[in-house]
Length: 190
Image (cartoon, rainbow, N blue to C red):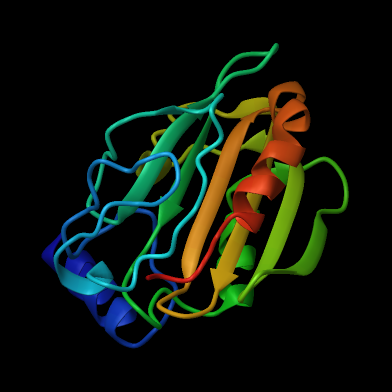
């Protein structure tokens, strides 16, 4: 386990992909509806603003690298959205993260990727449907067929931020536009 942790720390320091078993600086507590709270450490003075959709129910982040965690309501059951931050310029490339996320789902069809601007930020988004695979780091013990993943890397001042939402496909379809609006709500710090 110590070797595994050392490898994770080395990967994080080198800008390589960081698994969801997050390690590192303190999380941001008290995320408000329009702007996350300033936190000591790597986010101090550099946290972007964002608008948390009113239908999402914020929960306490389960690790220090989760700067936002919320449940997503839907007709097929709840989904979850998480915003990860590993430090400015850290967390690996867009492609490495999109590929890692694709490895967490046995896709039913071709995944959809798109890139768009959200103010001063560039967003690279991934959408994939299929069976979410077991992952202790993501808290998934059994395969979850009929799922969908909406994920994005938000690049810009102070970033990048890694946003991943998963849940039943119908729930995620109902919330796709809400997820995109959340991504579009990112605004520079200050």
